[in-house]
Length: 250
Ligand code: IPE
Ligand code: IPE
Ligand code: MG
Image: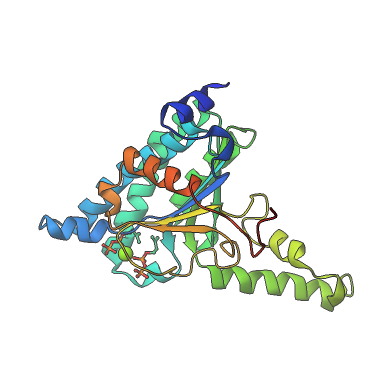
């Protein structure tokens, strides 16, 4: 057994049946702050600590890919002050976590419209992605300015440009090709999708990729989400019967 197997077994999980890819809609920072009569930004600050926990726990347990929905295309509609606080927090996170990612063999990847982010954020992201590009312990996907519909439009444009140029025939387009033109092309589809803070919606996250993901929604607000609950959710996942439309053969 390697050390992640030990961690998983100690936590009461079957190391062989962990989800290869966990995606999380990290929601509820604003409500956490409101409950305490604090500014929403305080909720985002506390939420950044939960991000550290989730990355660390996933890596220790041996989850191969973790995707975190950090900023959606719709989040650009929020007040300027909140957006800039989020960008500042993101920069702080990247600076403080870079070494830990490198030490723990974690590869950073971004999904989303990176070109819409402020230059100071993009350069830090690029620097960390480059420094970690050969790491193989886990891929941390940050969804930034991410929207599934915009991702799908981008894919359609890429494929239709190839068709228009005469280098691709429409009949050759299959599910694999579509997947290969999404931001997540190198990563298997999420096995498990978690949303915190109780909203029963997808909010434009990974629409294509979650076709067969197991969904877990918890009422816990993201800043209150902890390692114990994360492990409980993974246990619950391990108890699910994933049929993929098929029936069990006797
Ligand atoms: C999630 O928390 C963080 C982002 C969307 C950036 P929210 O800021 O959406 O918190 P609530 O939903 O208002 O509580
Ligand atoms: C989804 O949360 C986006 C992120 C977690 C980054 P939102 O708070 O933006 O979603 P809605 O408004 O509840 O749909
Ligand atoms: Mg929200």
